[in-house]
Amino acid sequence: MKVVITARNFAFEGCTATALLQENGFAVYDFSDREARNGAAYLQALREADAVINGFEPMDAALLSQCERLRLISVRGVGYDYLDLSACAAQHIAIARTVGCVGDAVAEQAMAYILYFARQVHTLNAFMQQGEWNRIMTEGAAGKTLGIIGFGEIGRALAKRAAAFGMRVLYHCRTPKTELPYTFAPLDTVLAESDYVALALPLTDETRHLLDAAALAKMKPGAVLINVARAGIVDSEALREAVESGRLRGAAVDVFESEPCTDSVLKGVEGIILTPHTAPFTKSNFIRMNDRAARNVIDFFRGEIDKKYLV
Image (cartoon, rainbow, N blue to C red; front, side, top):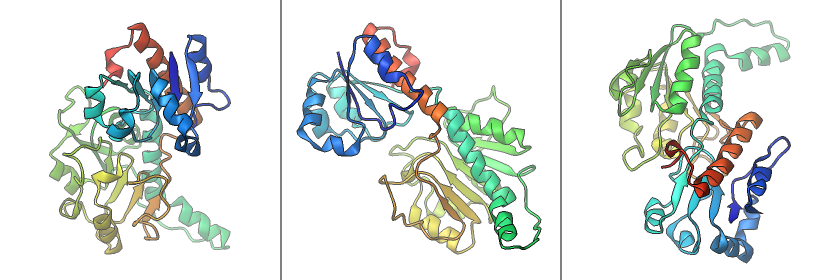
């Protein structure tokens, strides 16, 4: 059995996912380097691969048509909008995800964004570094309302952290989670009442530009938008205008339409924080995700994979 690795950072100190695959009889071909995926060797490896461990590398119908033996795409992560699902179905290629691994790390970064705006430590540090004893009264997080759109693994992990900081949590999703101690609300209510709105939902045809100019106009004046989901959920031009006009206090964006991205339309706007898709980017989280992605390959070909990991 042959496994092609396209996911970056699949092998680093402390990560044993590659060894795990090899110990279970899989030949591993590492194409995690972007440049390595431009040559004939990559296409040949795909033609012979039984499985691919994928990060955010697009696989369209044209590429998948060359994957003659492929039976599994093991996604390191939970999103899979960059895969051609119709082509996968037509070729009987299964898709597995690392469910249960990513929520804590992404929620941690989303909470960091909230605290950035709530306590302005960066501003206070700048004063001190300039020799100024200038204390400002910050808003704080306690008592503020966090609205979460999408309430899967990441949304629930963020709600838990926000509640621990004394925040009121509203959420909106397709199916209310009545067993959880948070308040479900219609989307318009979440937008209108939240001091912070965090996106934690997948990108689909239904959610593309869910937050367009009209939706952003429904947000509470002075609110902050946090996007750790997918760039396409938000109309970036409309977001820029909403922040520049002062209608929104700011935004924190970790995801972009095309990555790597160094020329975002949001670049250079005061009040907008941009980070290079690092919400899941911690060593412990990548070790867990890499391990789970490898185990999904092993379990799939053994016929033992838990269905919760399959799309």
